Image: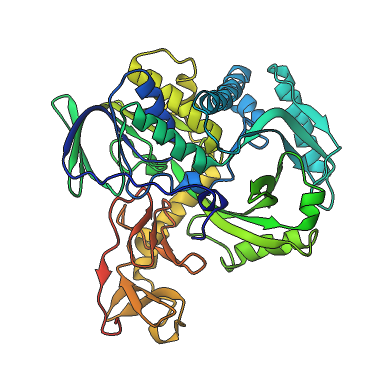
Length: 508
C-alpha cells in the first residue's frame, strides 16, 4: 500500500502499548475517525474511556480516504425514497448534514488545523440516461426540503458533462490531521490511548466485558467496535450482511492545475466512477483523482493497472501531470446500502458498532459517533432507528447477496480442492501466488531480494482461500475483505489473527 497524501502531510503518533489491566467505563476498539470522535464526545461528557488500536493511530481506512465531508452520497436519495419513503430519506440527509456541522464545530472549538475548506459537491452525468437520473434525484431532494441545484456550468477534466446536481456548503479536509489532533485533545480530557494493542478476545461476564490484548486487558462496562469491519463475528454475523470494495486514488501536480484549479468536489453518477477534489501540499495545489474500484479480492483484469489507468486518464487533460502520491482504500458496504450504527446485538448489552459507510465514512463517522455516544449516555437520538444495526430488513441487494454466496462457496470449498493455477518455479521475483506443494496449498511471495515468504493461504476469519494482490503485495480475502501483508500479518479486519507462516526449503 502506497503512502497517502494525508499521511505524508501529518505527524506520527507515539502512544504506549497496553501492558497491564485497565478498568474503564467504555472501551473503544479502533483508532480511526469513528473512534476519535466517539472518544472525544464521551470524554467531554465526563466518561472514562480507553482506546485500543492494533497498529498506529489513524493509519487505516481514515488515512486512505478521499477525505470529503458531504451528505451527497452519489445519486442515493431517489433510492432511499423508493425503498424506505420520503421521511427516511429526509432523516438520512439531515443526519449527514448534522455530521458535517459537528465536524466543523469540533474543528473550530478545538482549533484543529486540518485544511478544512467549505466546498460545493457535484454529481455529474456524461450521458442522457444518467442526466435523467440526476434530474430525478434533484426532484426527490426538493420534495424532502433540500435545496439541491441543477447546473451545467462546471469545469472538470471530463470530455463531456451534460449536467450535474449541486450540494452547497459541503467540505473537504485532511482526515488524518483531524483524527490525530482530535485524539490529542481527547487525551488531555483523560482518554487513555494505546497503540500496537491488537484485541485478541472479547468476553462478557457478570455485567462487564474483558477485552484481551497480547500483553494486557481492559475491563469495561461498555464496548464500541470502531474497527471498520467488526472484529467480532457472533452473534452479530455482520460478515453475512456486508462486503468490502477497493478503490484507488492519485494526487497529481501540474502547472495547469495551479492556474486553472477546479473548485469543488466532483463524482461521476455511474460506473466507471471517477471523482475529483483538490488539496494543498507544500504550498501547491494537487488534484486528487479517484476511481478504478472493484470488490476486494475480485479484480477483473490486472490489478496493477488500477493506478496506471488513473494516471493515463488525467494525462489526457494534463500531459505534464506528475503523480506525487498514490494510495488505495477499502470500504464496507451493507446489502441494503444503509450503515449499521448502534447496538451490536440484542444478545450482548452495551456493545455498539459502526460500520458499512458505503464510501462516505467522513460525514457518517460523525453521525455514528453522535448516535453511539448518545446511547452510552442514555440520551435520545432521533436518527438511531434509521441506522439500527440489529435491523432484520429484507435483503435489498439480491444480486450482491448472490455474488457473496457464490464467492464464499468458491473460496471456502471449490477453490480449495481445485489444482492451483500457479507453479512455484514460474512465479517471478517480485511476485506471488498460490501453489501446490506435496498436496498442500501454499501462498508464496518472492521478494525482490530473493527472499521467499510462505503462508497457509486460508483467511483466519472464516477460512476462505485468499488471493495474491501483486499491486500492493498483499493477501486479500474475496469473501469478507480481510487483508494481510506478504508475511501474513493483518492489515484489515474482520480477521483478528495473522496467517499461519510456513517454512519451505526454498525460504531463506
